[in-house]
Image (cartoon, rainbow, N blue to C red; front, side, top):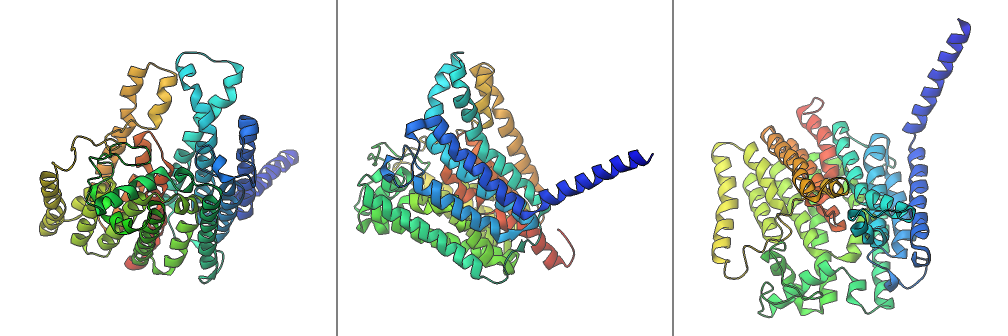
Length: 487
């Protein structure tokens, strides 16, 4: 009997020790750097002599992420972000956001360039031992952001007032300064080492600013090919995109793109600051600094995807006015965002469900009437049927089906998760009874939306993750306003 008790005691002690380790913040910091080092090492295993080396010219980067990002920006800023919070917020927010998304960008920039060339062989049923590593990477790289988003989304169930490691604002101000400094250093390095536009900034940023410059000089960005790829622009970029970038068209395109991005980054930061202030004022600086210090965001400053900063700014400002009770203004800001990119239009689903009577009428009229008028009078300016990028809801999950079943059946099955997700969105919107619940529903929607498109672009992080901390904090904010627990 005593032996049995001793064994049970050792099991209890062992379980308790394991729990203490898993609950220890330092465990996650060590785990992060171990996984990150493994991800970087995989570049050398897969790419061999083509793997990125420190201090080589940045213009040798096969795709996006440079050696500066891999060896300096990502590990430094991830460390800042991981050390900012303790406990639940550190494990459920900082860890997945600081780990999965930089590794995804590295994989997208390097490993996919190698492994995606094997897709035709896989569909043809050709497989050998030499394909094992590429196929593993092919499946893991797209799955990383999905895993990170699901873990982050699950954190909403544990929403609370997070514990920061340092009192006051100084740590977060230093963290934010480090983020912008590293971004500025990489921008300067890219200018010094290469004259190529595609190395100096993203093609998305260049195209959006080139369209604004064309509009400033009397041209129509929808009928003339836009650089750098000299293709016709679809309504995936709405006309207000070019209206908002036109003022900077007096400068050279590359400089203008950086200046336009800076302006909308500031607008986005202010919107996030005020939105968090409406939820839980004590965390305005911490939440804003954390978002802009995420390693992936430091990369975004350098890559200047202007349109995505515009969209995210419209989303946070619209939700700020909605949570603050100015719902007609929220509808108007959502309308402006829809004129940039269709993404903010989704806010109208919870807005309409949550409002009642005359207020619902105002919210609907403010959004739909100007939109209908603009589409009617603008039909001669652009092709309304050219909406590539809006209705390609093929689903990232459906990406995997084609490897095990016929392509026709895969095309049908991939709509199942999309349909389930959209049904959930309408159901959750109908059950939203206050601004905080609208905020959480919107945050989950934007977290999962990119995976419905089947192509999870790195730039989606801007509007996908800007609502994560406000939604997480909304539980504590509701409790503070109600005087009792969660709403």
